[in-house]
Length: 396
Image 1 (cartoon, rainbow, N blue to C red):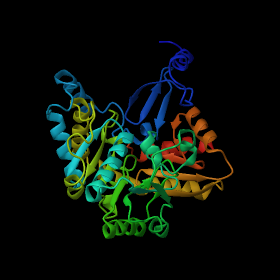
Image 2: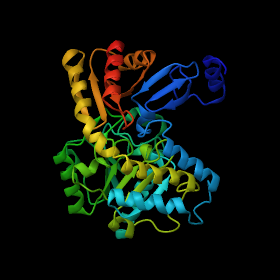
Image 3: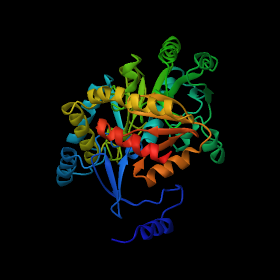
Image 4: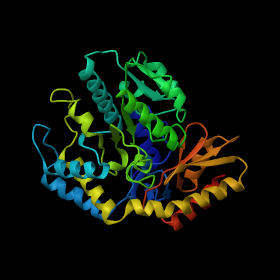
């Protein structure tokens, strides 16, 4: 095997430089640990940005994918396939919603959700001037549509003009949402727990208030569960803990536990009055390989009580993080839900802490400009949490 710097040099020569990557070449993973090409091991509390819910090299998951490779990888959506039927049924059952459209990514799921909302509104009045209300400090993806509802000007400024008809309200401020509503509003989109913006869970009264506004005005509620869904917060989907069902939900990341796949899911009302054949499509979305992964993920979540484990381990995780906040003056608070937690930092650059942690064999992420983000595989135990705390303290 080549030295790490050679792989890095080859990557920089051939791959468009849109990421400032850390100087590590990861080769393999096992459980909640990753190993680089030099043999150094890292405790992973980033999970590929909240993707690897089951950890790495999960035998039953790996075997299911190998088995599907031997059967069929792709057919297009001109035909039915077995894993598509299985995965769709399981996602509908887990969400309690009605219809699924599988995509290749979370960003594509957002695009589909926007189109479904606009088509729903168009079917009512055949107008093309409908508006969407999104949240400041939100993040929904990098395509033009997803950027248009992402409440961060830094991501947007070089790519304007974006999709029109988008207003921004303040997350957890119901009156700011109400002030944006007009007779042209067709949808309100928000993350149930804001991720990139700094790990902000929705306040229960806020989410219920937004839902009430939607019901009063026949506006569709779109909840982005791409990062916070699939058991991460202690419910299969974070909104289920609030008792607020969306009209459209987007999910991805841990939906496939490593295989690139996303979905938007519609309730019965929205599915019956929005997208029809010819309105939306994808070549790869819902292919047998990706759907075999989704189907197996749901099986393993149920078999191994993954969501229940998150609820059981969360108090220990929060206790240890709260102790850090109590111990270090530069940590001002902990916030989050389940195994989606953030430590708020003042007077120290978060990027330097993340970098130092990597040197100490710990992978953590940042969120916003001042938050250490901790989104480990959902299979972690107390021993891994203790090890994380030790490595993080050494990095401070």
